[in-house]
Length: 412
Image (cartoon, rainbow, N blue to C red; front, top):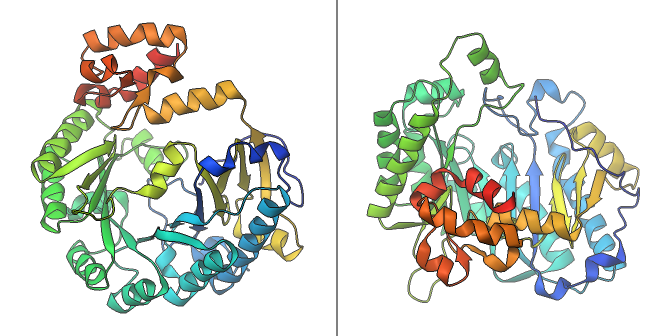
């Protein structure tokens, strides 16, 4: 089941934000995330806030676009009432769930509402996630015509038995078709991969990497499978029905991914993300929306369970689609709770996130104890020495494999 919401202060019924969110707002980008919580089936490894038809009795998917637009209207009022300066939206991301289970016309209406209420910045990045079996050429063309610029396709693996363990239902032969259709519509393409699935061999993983690279996407994300407590997969492992995750194999798979992707012209820019270089004079192929999360920009999360961050105030919506719809129908904010981050919490989160970026973390963000630790990290081969001499912590390949341990040493 989806994980529980964090414990924190209750959110105001009207969603009002404190005056402190105005501080430095002109230097922060504004993004919008729209969480479409619907899936045809629940994958055994997934603990995202998603629901199948049998889990949302009384909730109509056809009503969701209007509900999301109602929250967008509330967001515009709250930001204006807080005295924030008008800012065009730099990035929009439709995630889930499976956004493309909704008609393309619904996704287009939600994007049009973002543009109407906030305006879109010139060259705004607008992405939707898509499963290979939930959209076709017509849908991609409709999205491109509506202003979408990018599709993130959930490939996960090219190997049928791996997809079976993950309970992914798509035919891997459909991935090249969807990539070609998205490209023909004028969209940039990202492929999402998962490695370390129980029963997946290093050869299976290499086959998936090769299949992804054959499509020459603009961007590839490769995430290690994390077995989350409470998921079906966790129960299967506990009962001995599938083998446990092998950390050493995870490391070998990551090294294989980095080597193959680098050879193919992709550069890592975050521990789990690689992109082709920008065309001469062209836009970056990196995910600008995800970078906003990693660098502490502002974003408003729309939809059940969606999280937001505005000027150091983090808040999140009620999880179930029925409760979300009821709050909005009553003219209330769907926010369930919130917290205001103090300076030390924001510094710690900056270290956690920016250490994972290829551009690195400025040592000015470290406490004196953390700065003294950098020399030891260099000696252990975890941090690039040249970058450190220039005042930036940049992980080596070994450091990326042990990123969590590096962060702990920088913060202890």
